[in-house]
Length: 251
Picture 1 (cartoon, rainbow, N blue to C red):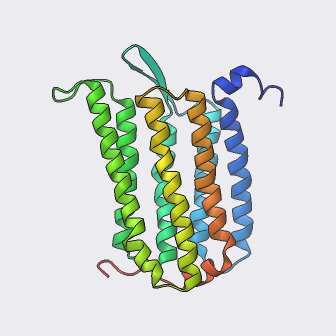
Picture 2: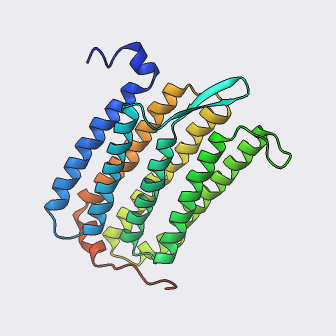
C-alpha cells in the first residue's frame, strides 16, 4: 500500500490504473454471479459483463505501461492514452445497446446511436493525435474542428436517446420505461463529462494529466460498473426487457 501512495505513482497515474484494475475485476466477478442466478435478461447480462471485462483489460494494460504515447504540440508534450479510446469504442456502444434492449428500440435506431458514439471517439482520438497542418489550416484549428465534430456526434447520440429510443421505451411496461429514463439521464450526464475533461486536458491544457486520469477513472467506473449494476439489479427490467425483442430494420 505504501508503494501505491508514493508521489511518483500518483503523478504518473499508476495509482488510478491499479485502482481501476481491481475495481473492474471485482465488478466483473459480481456481474457474472448476478447473471448466473437469473434465466432472463441474458442479453443485458452479457452487456454488463462486457462493460466490466473491457474495463478490466484496459486498466490492467495501462497499469503495465501499455496503451499510451507522447504527442508534442507546439512547446508542450502530452501523453495520449489511446487505449482509453479503444476501450470507449467498445463500451459506449455496449451501453447504448443495453439501453436499446430495455427500450425495445429498433435495430436501425440503436445502430445509429452506436455509429455516432463511434464517431465521437474517433474524432476525439484524431484530434488528440493531430500535430500537423491540414488543407491550409494550422494544427490548432484542425484540432478544434475535429473536437467540434466529436461534440456534434455526442449531440446526435443524446438526441436519439431522448427522442426515438425514449418513444420506444414509453411503449413498454411502466417499470421498464421508468428504469430506462433513469439510466438514460445518468448515461447522458456521464457522456457529457468525457469531452469536458478531454477539452481541459488536450486542447486548453488547464487540467493536469493526473487529474484527467482520475476523472476518466471515475467516469468509467460510473458508466461501466454503475450503469451495469443498475441494469442487473432491476429484476423487473430484466424480465420484461427479455420479452421485448428488438424490432426489425425499418420498424
